[in-house]
Image (cartoon, rainbow, N blue to C red):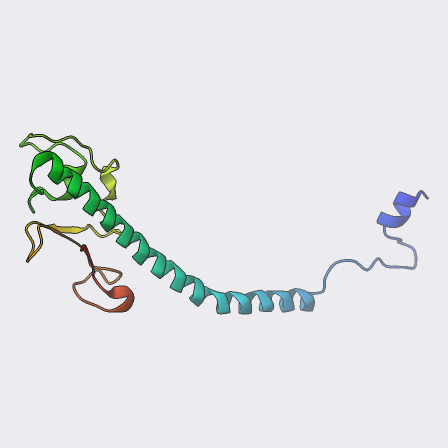
Length: 150
């Protein structure tokens, strides 16, 4: 018998080869993996929620910059009826539009796939961009809080 056969082919006569894991060992490993997953999942979900808030805040800042460029070119902010869509495609009114100011027209939804709300004029500001947050309703606190432009 060659050395390869001696090392890798189990002996059949009189001796059984002992290889692999027992069922108990596999169950212990699966239980340990389950405990680690149960402990890590809530922490990962917390990071995911805060990342969605940060992403939405960054998108609102980008819209604010694009709206300022639109204002420089046209001398006015888009009306509530025109909405944020005029940042991606020329409005029917024409004018001195030099866009697109936002390259991807499908970006007008927040991190929770809810469309942004846009108003112009708004209270004491020329415009306001609003995301309703995780709960997709007006109001809320924490992760459910509304996110507004400055």
